[in-house]
Image 1 (cartoon, rainbow, N blue to C red):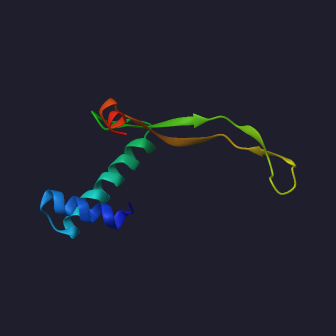
Image 2 (cartoon, rainbow, N blue to C red):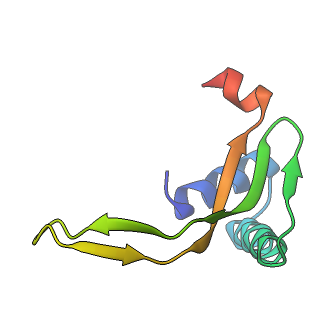
Length: 89
């Protein structure tokens, strides 16, 4: 499912226009992004938790040459599905 299909599904389920559904989805993704940028979590009971974790610096390999390369430490977004969502899979 891509973003357009998700917007169409939200619009149909909620009985709103696609423009309104797109505004809602954009607002949701913006709010989650801003919250994660601050280092906080977003928890939606039954659905899951969005959080930020730190990935340590590590040594990798260039697949073309096989040479060792250094990969910098960075923050990454994580999603942990809630019990209800995991049960539906």
